[in-house]
Image (cartoon, rainbow, N blue to C red):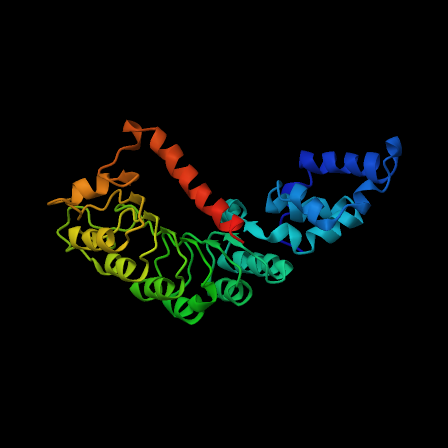
Length: 309
């Protein structure tokens, strides 16, 4: 498999380390020959998944045949995280989609998590066709369209965690399709760009009226949400009221930068009754521990999603 990774791995110290393992354990020194060859692929995969996808693809196959066979099989790829690889060297959508298809194909339909950046319609469609066990889908800043989401959302009925932050081609239509088909969804990230990045989308004191449509769709179609991130959304108090009223399982809410939210009436009190709430005016520097708590919550969702399988 070629993910254009060779140039970044030829001098990787892990390659030298693994070559030593082959010489000392597989090939002979110290009387350990054959031990790696006899290990079950599932056991090898438990070790290999501690490495990045880039290292698994570019380093492990050159060590020995058993390593190569394991990496080309499904056990190493139940969870696919190529987000950092996608961001390196400004990968094109074609390169990302190609890598997604190749890695998902290796799972033989058992992929449970995909984390990638700049995924396009072809990659999304392929994941949908092979991802009936998918629990976590994180595709921020992707070019997936409403049309593709409406066509394939039904394939993600077991999904628990969804990150479609900065996916500007997904609108209310796509969001509604996810909500209607993904009934087990508990964590949604739908953060949008900062006002200075995309002024036409955001509200920053410019007099643009609030748009509660996405918030209303979330409230109507995703009542089981526990974690919700909507930073720099355009909704106001009406949308927030609907979310609080209908998403009764909600424990974590992040609406930083949602300038149209005023928290009038009892909205502020209701928000602060949640386990964790970040207001439109939340300042991370005032509460450095908040960032760690948020990360732990997201990781807990991912881990619990995997454990449920």
